[in-house]
Image (cartoon, rainbow, N blue to C red; front, side, top):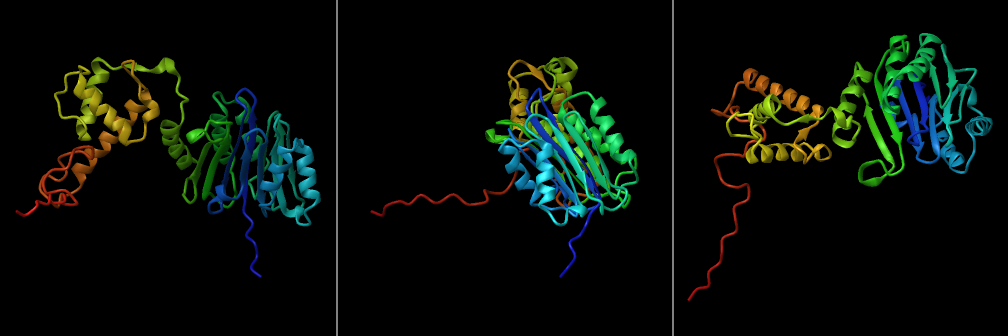
Amino acid sequence: MAAIPRFGTFSIVAYERETATWGVAVQSKFLSVGSVVPWAEAGAGAVATQALANTHYGPEGLALLRGGARAQDVVRRLTEADPGRDERQLGVVDREGGAAAFTGAKCMDWAGHEVGDGFCCQGNILFGAAVVRGMARAYESTGGDILDRLLAALAAGQREGGDRRGMQSAALFAVRAGAGYGGNDRWVDVRVDDHPSPIEELKRVFRLYDMTMLSREDPSTVLPIAGEVALALQHDLGVLGYYSGRFTGRWDAASQAAFARFVGEHNFENKQRDDGTVWPSIVAYLKERASAEVARRTRTAPIVPHALDRGPGAAPTGGGPSTPPEKKRTRSK
């Protein structure tokens, strides 16, 4: 019988009382750690199961939490019923923010945990106790919401050495009633399954997820679309092929239509505004994409003449439709 792989991991499980949000963040020298460690359910709590992970801890722990069990009771009941508990590690927060953790006596060194107010940090095969201690301090001292604090905790754990075998995958998972896509409870579910710098890659992917799926930007930061802002948007939309007018800095109907098409094609509908302002994140993203397009044209040798002269948002030219229109039948006389 093949041995079940054990993997070094550090994670944080937390609850934000102000918004009734539960979340888990994790990094490991293990492929696709997000498919194993984090579990959470809105209104119930969250669980991280790791080391020689018992994946039954996830659904069984959530069932206990859903029934009103406190975090300490969930940890006790799960581990007492498990003959392999000495090789397990577990972190739990309940529906009220109570937190508890467990580190089995046979978990590979360094292994341990730290429990705080509304959160717990745990890890195994680490460089030392400073990893979970640094995670806890970062979570407690970082501003912003639970997502900012969870990511800060992961980064702090890695700065203290993290998994002593290296890095491979990371995940961020958070639930809040009705806050997810289409009104489901899965607010954030972002994973990096294999990458040499998974935490930094997780941050990059989350930045796009944040822009596309969430509404966390401060409304006081929006920029009026006029002057230099309008000129920059016209320029970047022009580079990308969405706008073909003059760069005047006047936000006319053509500019607005080009911007609306860009927003729609990039799934940024939640960033669309009708008050003549734009989110700074969209301005920055447009500039980034336009710069990448300029680089593409500069560095890529075109196969077809002028193939790289127009951006990806431009309408296709030349040739007929992919499917020829059906010929209209005429009745013979």
